[in-house]
Amino acid sequence: MVKQYQMYIDGAFVPSVSNRTFAVYNPATEQILSEVPRANVDDVTRAIDAAAQAQPDWEQWPAVERGQYLHRIADGIRARAGEIAETISAEMGKTLSLATVEVNFTADYLDYMAEWARRYEGEIIQSDRRNEHILLYKKAIGVVTGILPWNFPFFLIARKAAPALVTGNTIVIKPSEESPNNAALFAEIVHQIGLPKGVFNVVTGFGNEIGEALSSNEKVGMVSFTGSQLTGQKVMAAASKHIIKVNLELGGKAPAIVLADADLDLAATAVVNSRVINSGQVCNCAERVYVQSSVKAAFLAKLVEKMQAVSYGDPLAKTDIDMGPLVNEKGLQKVQAIVENAVAQGGNLVLGGKAVEQTGYYFEPTIIDNVHNAMEIMRSEIFGPVIPVATFETLGEAIALANDCEYGLTSSIYTQNLNSAMTLISRLKFGETYVNRENFEAMQGYHAGWRKSGIGGADGKHGLEEYLQTQVVYLQFRGE
Image 1 (spheres, helix red, strand yellow):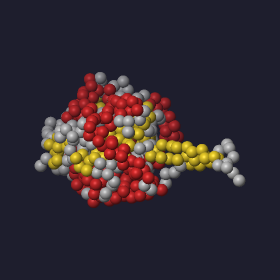
Image 2: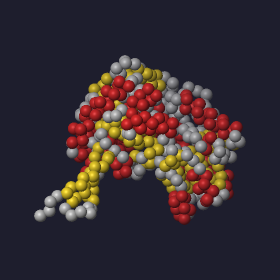
Image 3: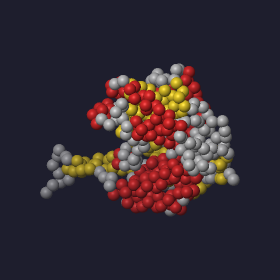
Image 4: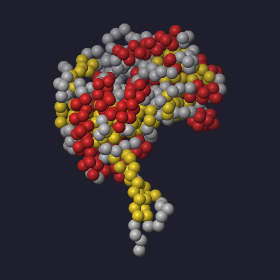
């Protein structure tokens, strides 16, 4: 049965003013799941106007009361966790176990951000004058727009909305056109718990049709975008028209460095887990592996063994699998092209290497060695279950190879030598570095990239402060 969903604007579920819709497909079965409104610029304007109308009053609420709404949303999510997880699995191909983790993590994230209501604070600054106080206030930015990717669609709603709302902003969310159904469920929960109208809004549609309107409206104070570098550049250009603040996470090409003294079994397990989670469609996955040449053969053998054991299938038909399909045919074709190009350039195909000939967008777990940094596979995001392996001789060479990249989101190190680990940590140019573990961040950390991986970040205290701006007050008084 094809479900029908609506947008959520100004506290009501509404169609597009154009009455147009588009279909959402299950990448495991290639069947239509739902039809949702195809928003146009007028819909975006309507949503931003609603958020702008609601924001001044919302900002006047005590932060702790705003935080209580986040707790209620979290409770509502937990009450419907199974339904939401199945919805995520169906529309973007994630395993049901990982979708369940995402749903529960989203609820926990809302609770975590709600608790910042009593904790974020301003400052009192020492003055050079007698009888003067300098007060630094932290205040809401105003209206925020959030443009989301499809790979962690439900969590990204909370990652943008939770810090925005608790600090007094209002928000307009645009989910990916690949995975909008879960956003409709989030809106249903928001509606059920009685969040004041206009504070949270959802518009569904295509980025090339409404992305500019979400990024350039003069009533918007900040646009937060997660997605590709190319689209991020377009968001930034649109925002520049009214000098709108941007918060951008634009992907990564994470190096994993395996030293000769590493626990090779641990390293191989962590790399495989990082690479096949969500079928390799994660920005902070280990995207390129550098192993010290003296242990290359031993490490590669372990890597092959573990990748061969990776199982895949329809996430709603098989619960004991490691990964599902890629999100769409375009993604599948991209991964296939990158692998074929690597082989043509001299890469050695060790395992896998092709799309699976069956219904759904599946790609075989793949390993390619004998690669080097000039290849596309070592420079562009793969976004599929493919591990390229290169070698190095010295620590200095490993550092140079890892940093030879336009991205700078995450990185990982495998060694049992503290000095080696600290040397790498001090010289790697990435926003996150994982030592002897898989690439997955904590909500209390700060997920932020260097270089073309973005501007600003998310999570923790520093992520919360992305949604605040300062007002400094110079208060001169007459002393007695």
